[in-house]
Length: 303
Image (cartoon, one colour):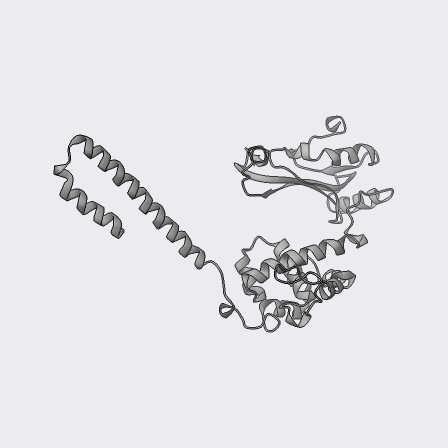
């Protein structure tokens, strides 16, 4: 019990017999209000104390982000299995992204800061990560649901640097992928359908005509203060707020179509309408995507 509540309790014991009924009600109401206030103040102090414990400072981390960190160990290994496990790309693809413009952009573009002009020349020697480290940080962030504190430990970066580098690296990665032909999302054409089906039939002989698969993805989002957005993102089946996407993959593993960031209240079959149109109008007779029962079956049902 806090000191304020202890004092109130002693006063109430001493004065209780001296109060008439009306005064008793006023006194009880005041006591209840002060109790609520003290409880709220204590809860605020506890939240503030918890926030102080939920981040790392420089002295809690390895001293040099460019030397002997967990990331440096991983990158030096150049092990494809390790790269795919942590970042979703093999070594060759990782290096290809670097060479396709990521390194050049990282080395020539100043990191946006509120306390420095945007036209200032980049000081690479002052940055905590080189281009490979920045790409590694972005891919770790995209490929995992780990907390930011884990990224701090892996890359030996303080919280503000992690946040700033992630946002900057993602903007560079997006601009680079827009120029890389292999990153384009393309629906198959011509003989590609037969080639994709051959890969499927090699493992599943009965799936003649299948050239890929399709499924939905729900990504959790914060609850919006806007009532309309809150209702649109609430998924009654999952009892939480999401944005919904549908991805179609060819049998090579490449994304061949997608519909992204639809309201979480929408069913997968509704989100996938644009992909249905591709199946109806841009797919040869007899070819299809393999899906679960959340999606309609057959040409007649997707019209």
